[in-house]
Image (cartoon, rainbow, N blue to C red; front, side, top):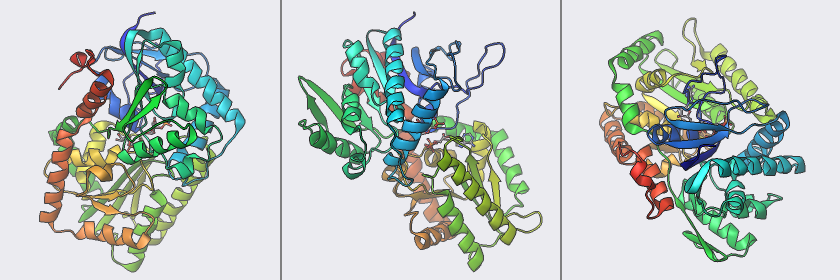
Length: 471
Ligand code: ADP
Ligand code: G6P
């Protein structure tokens, strides 16, 4: 077994789950912040990525992708149901997102979560060379740091949570809360998106495990586990370059023409997820149409919503409700050849996404809760001429970094309608001043800065960073 000095461990491998019959695989990021976040870094860094290839049954052998070795962990159909769809996405996901949907607790799901985490830890132990740096990602694998430390105490282990970490009053609902916290504490460094999450975690370990903890460190026996905020970002330069390409500009012009050259284009791009506030946004838009504040003739809404976690009931219910509401709004307010909402559920390549960002006069990103929200950052990066208004939920991690956005509370329907109108009617000079400030922030705080700051904190005097591209 070949071993690596840097191992990334994530539920998903950074490839599409379809593998061609000849065994070849394409590097096609599946929609999702985690994959998008790490892709640019690992393209330049010899490393192994341990993850699930999608699907069930024996793990396919995959070729290296851009020098990154793919080490596949198999999931059975029971693992898929009880670990991925169950404990990860029907217990932890809703609980960590303010319980906007009811989290479910089942003992069988917890058993599957333990079993799959153990499998990931064993796979990682096999491919990590002595003293390697291992970076474990996200809520699917919270037990891996602890399990891996037992197997391989020589490793330097980092854990990063891409989603919010909830306040104690929510986390305390978890039947196996102590085990989950102990699992995370197997890491040397635990990274969160926001300082508030690190604070929540410190409070919980003090309360549940009775360990001495501050917002920066936890004492676990003779070890010190550091904790902190490392807000994830995007490849700002890559998105800006893409958006500036002549073919993308031409595509954007064509898209705008196809939309009927409206005065205003509002765009939303989400995974079809109940955390994204899609229904609240549609309601706000529909009420503005009904009151005549917005007219289909001069304003269109483009809603991209890629189906996600499709076998989970709450996701099926959401999709049905969204599609019914889109149908109702188009039926009521659309005209022949002029729908009120252009609704798209397809995955797009990066160039098409960049063209969409270019035509959006207002980008509406209004999740009820979101760890970060990379779409908001991608939009800003794509606005190379400093135009465009970002309507952003104050409950997205990105809001802490982009205070110049038009910030909204998506639960407040009247506030949402008002701020959408404000963004639509904003003075161009104000829009430009805000956009310029946000672009400057993202220029300095891109994905490379994020990875450098996390890995240098984790490596702490080691040599790993010499291998990491600074481009
Ligand atoms: P989440 O991680 O919850 O899905 P983010 O906004 O943080 O939300 O990340 C979503 C990522 O998926 C972004 O990089 C975005 O560009 C990508 N994405 C979303 N919708 C599509 C789509 N229709 N086609 C291709 N990529 C998409
Ligand atoms: C969020 C999570 C990621 C996950 C992505 C897509 O960004 O933080 O870990 O990969 O959603 O969800 P999926 O269930 O398709 O992996």
